[in-house]
Image (spheres, rainbow, N blue to C red):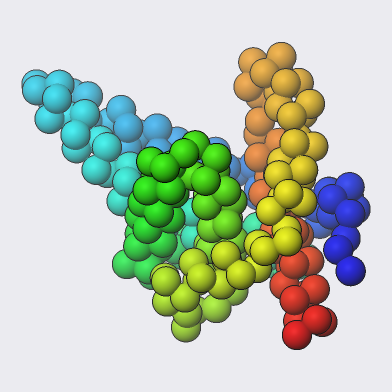
Length: 207
């Protein structure tokens, strides 16, 4: 039985109790490193070269960090011990993390070449890829992508509705000049981790 999104969000808030500080620190570190990767090469004399190197650096970093975020927020969601260094665990599986990021972006873009809507649907289908990789160290990139597509069958609209529930919070964060995002990001990510575990449990029960 599918758990209501409102219930998942409430459970996410409960799981974040006592962990808000660590979750915010993880988000800040992630932001600072990506910001530095984007702008840290601006001192180079050739602007186009600096921009290219920054883009390459960011592309190489995002995948491992997405895996690290999935590992961290699954731990938060499951009421396990958490630490900031979990953010960097994705680099232990750099090839897998980078491959997952590259292929999900590539496949989504290829679908989007047909029409925007198929591209969006494809991106939603791949949404659980990094959580699957975080949950199973033995799984490969393509298998994780296929498993994500299978998991999201019948759950895509529910996932969209979960995202839409945060629109009001997003607008409030804008009014705080962005400060509110320090709390919103962990809330969203923990809710998605709850969503993943709920879908996973339902699939096991109906297997």
